[in-house]
Length: 144
Image (cartoon, rainbow, N blue to C red):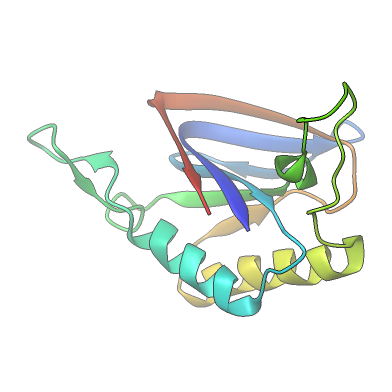
């Protein structure tokens, strides 16, 4: 599993010009599922993300978690994180999970975050999406 996490002041996702998810302060997560990923991987990464202390406290130290700032998650499926561009000019996606498996783990990840009390909005699996964000920092992390 690969996740690109961006700390945001706001983020939203649209499908066919219809707003389907929007958050204010929090994390935009672009989530790619690999062919060998499991529910355990989902839980491990979700727990890591929920407990990451990357928001500033009153002393301007990066010391607060998303829960500490009452932040939200916007989780967008992103199979292209598994692109292999080493050969030729057209990426291959051999390491990405098959769509049915990937969607199941994507949904599991989202539901696990919600079960931890985290307000979580989503993109739409398999759809052409338009994502907008106001990156805060900018602060971007890649987690595997």
